[in-house]
Length: 112
Image 1 (tube, rainbow, N blue to C red):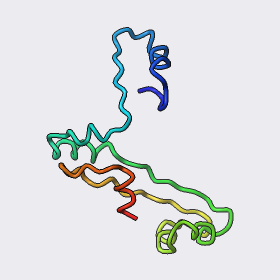
Image 2 (cartoon, one colour):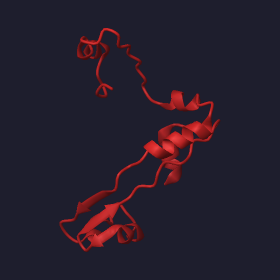
Image 3 (cartoon, rainbow, N blue to C red):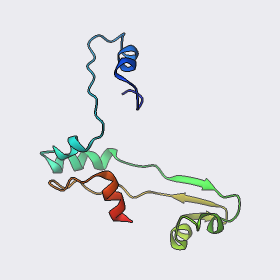
Image 4 (cartoon, rainbow, N blue to C red):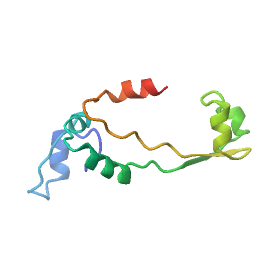
């Protein structure tokens, strides 16, 4: 894998020592997902590898005061480990459903 945003020329330079390496540039993964022909196998793999780790943070003030601008009180309370620290465990992504490919931005907007 190469860093995001590298140009073709930069990629060739970074991979110059590997003559047998081919480069496939994907602007996004939607095309790959929309081409999934075995959703059950894909979802079994995704369930094992698509995990976001728990994210914890300390708040300067109490977390309910600092975070209420962005999060509802019930979310802050559920994540609180003390008055000034929180730990969030993101939900795993939903299972892939064939013939329902949508833009990531659209899917995120619909969840709000």
